[in-house]
Image (tube, rainbow, N blue to C red; front, side, top):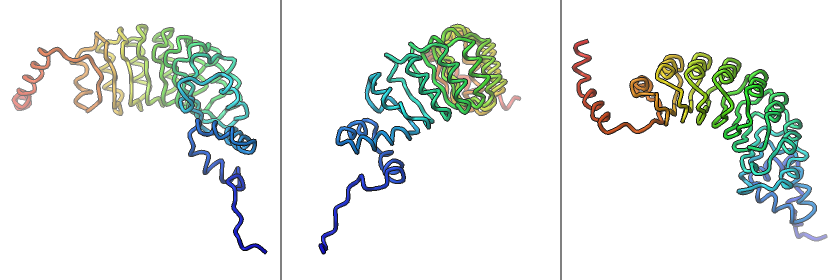
Amino acid sequence: MSLTPSRGCLLDLPWEDILVPHVLCHLPLQQLLGLQRVSKAFQALVQLYLANMRCFDSSQIGLAVPRAAFLNLLKDNKVLQQLELQNCSDWLTDRELLPVITRNHHLHHIQLKGCAQLSCHALMVISLNCPNLRRLSLAHCEWVDSLSLRSLADRCKALEAVDLTACRQLKDEAICYLVQKCSRLKSLSLAVNANVGDVAVEETAKCCPELEHLDLTGCLRVKNDSIRVLAEYCPKLRSLKVKHCHNVAESSLSVLRNRGVELDVEPLPQTALVLLQDMAGFAPFINLQI
């Protein structure tokens, strides 16, 4: 009888109980794909991991994810919770995305930034299949229209963060409907949309008291009055971006600035800075007179 201990193999460990949840989950996706080439056993192990993967981030693979690789990676997965596809924007269409969405009803975070070849039907399918959705980025997706956004608002009322940057088809009416239905919103971007104005901002302020971050960069129709309403109704606001909003003056931002809200605004001219400093110097005397 030999007293020499036998050398175990990594693959001898329980796959579903040990390797998948406690080992493979710590490896970057790029390395896992390389691991598949080692042997058929490793290929089967990685496929098991991919089928049980909770988060898929295309940026972990590289600057651009091939279509064939994407289809192979997610073909068996039905338990995804996070799906980030910004690195698939060159080729991603409804044909590739919709089967993944319809198989995964537990998604709560979807990132589609720059996926310009999708259609409004994709947003409809997301609305129908992802009732627990909390975070959604549709930045630079100009195919988003008011009808598909209404579908999202009607069915995904747990939304906490929505990025609609450069969704230029959307107007005040569509934004108002969204915030009326999704009052839990904490973060909203309406940046780079000349159609968004005071009506949308005021309705957002009144409907979303939990709002913490609002991006209005380049919303040229936004004016002082809506910023004042925002200051009144959103006590938890932490950051506001109004750069290139030429109709928003320092006077309407002063309350937010005094509350410590982080503001991204156009730099003040030097003459205005000097004036504000002078006013600050007189502040104690003004308070004393009051």
